[in-house]
Image (cartoon, rainbow, N blue to C red; front, side):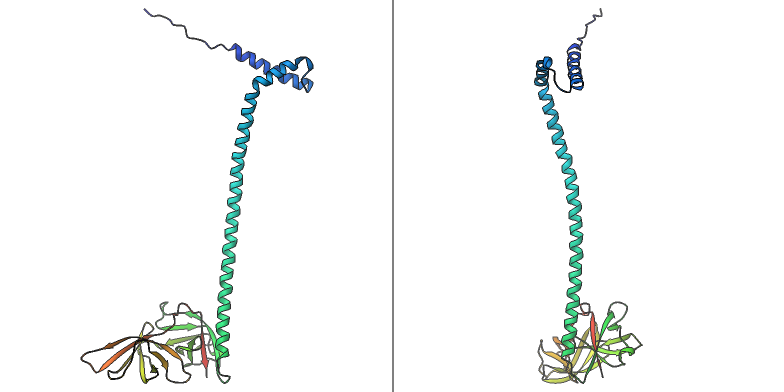
Length: 267
């Protein structure tokens, strides 16, 4: 047998009563603008009853207001930090450029101050270096218009011999490094003996001398002509047991990727 169990219904009357009180309260405020004397006790009762609700509402809105305000502040701070970072990078790059210009001008002034009054020297910017389509050569931005001729000595810092000019045009020249394969130059090693050095490529050079000549790793190698220019330092000595000669290896003492200018001695 099917038995019907009546479900409990929620009593809606208390909610209706509370709603009516709220409506009455709001109406009194709208009409009078304040609580009338006769209803002051009712108003006080209303406020005391609903005070926890109002307090909770204020706390909720206060907290959420600060929460979303925090988002706004964080976004503004993030944007400001990004702006400051960009300005810092800009200032750092400008400072680096200024330092490089200062160093290059200082080098140029030092070189020119040590040149004999009878000598002429021209500065040139390096346009191409070894490894960028050319082999043991440089391309510089000075040429015949600057008084440069084929065969002029090209130096780093005015005292390190790099090579000589060739294929000179009006505003551009090529420089063949002394390390170019097959190039030969007269040198002085350790201030004790003279020899001929030959380029073997890759800014490396070698000297072949008899075994009975004393030579040491670390000996300085200079161009034996005029002016006296530095060429490098002895890095290795290969003494063949069966042969009468010893092979001395040295390399240009300048990293060509770290210099921007060269100086040309104009005769």
